[in-house]
Image 1 (cartoon, rainbow, N blue to C red):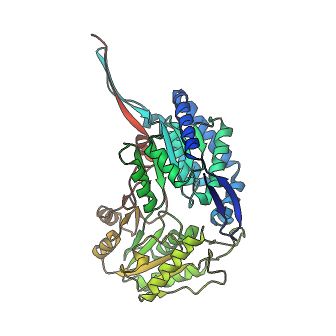
Image 2: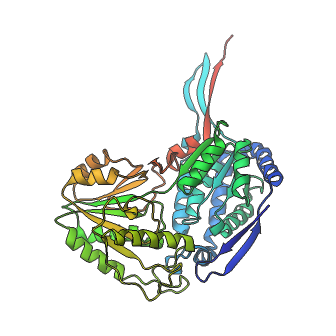
Image 3: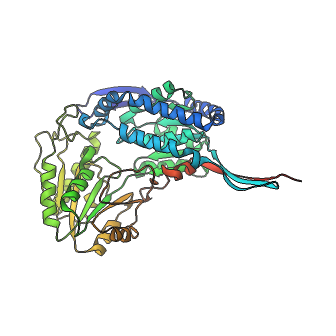
Length: 458
């Protein structure tokens, strides 16, 4: 047993401390979830949907709490109002498609035989949620897992475990049994033991590549399905025919929102050489319009990074790039304290030999490179260990589709970025990991097929 300490990035204050479960207690929690799952799955689908919707409604009545606690835990400015819009959009969509997504596939229903494929819940789903969008990333799996008839154990990030407690309160208040949806505190070793001991049936992990490897190592040989979303180094390509102002607004927001702490945030920008100077000039002006400061202040547009160790990595990447010839365009902000409050930065004269263009930075810095044509842009966009999303800015949809077909990524955007559409599959490739979240494929990932061949006459 150990302690989890939640430290606010605003001022370094300790917000909360919680005890983790020991191995025996964690296994007991999983056993209760497994026992409760059978009765939960036996409830009518409409009832499960209604209870999940009720939990979402309860969270919607507490958005002030959501907004304030997010600012305290991970630094998002209160002016942006929390995450309820995306949280509810995803849950509502998955609830809405459930009857069709989970209905049997009937091959034959005649006087002779019934032949069909049904979708069966997996059992106990372990959701290991991240801190950067702690409500939205969690609901991606929680909602469809519960609707499909699974029980859920939620292990939230140490940085945002108050979110896990809030979700557990809401789902319990909605009428979902405590053992069907439980928020638990675990250390890494106990988490690995739950998986390696096959006390759960499915693991959804969002986090670092190192964390994803640890999860897959724990699951090795168990035949437990693991879905991972391990971040990215997402590129944007601004073609010669792009609407320049729209591209600057969209791409820079995608790079800087949430202090750059977005799984699908823009970390690399490639601009056609004919637009390069104008794009950089407008991008610098855009970033200079941001106001770094305390996220509890209404005028703040960019808050501190969630943890000082994340801020250190951003500064390391900037320093490394500048030492190797990159040009930094943004002067230090008066609010930059050398700790969690980081001046947002634009770098040019960057190359793919620099860490800032290869490693995931996950902060408010972006490198911008000129390219001569689509071919060079495609080559550079694919020159990455990650593959979550890629954004193309152009007036030519046929060109965007042709470019997208050649990109090694999970999602291709045109004239937008940094967005998760619940009707589309959220997935990745390479070191971003694998899996299928949301959409109808999300239900397929959280259930297993069972075939019936019932001969009606002997």
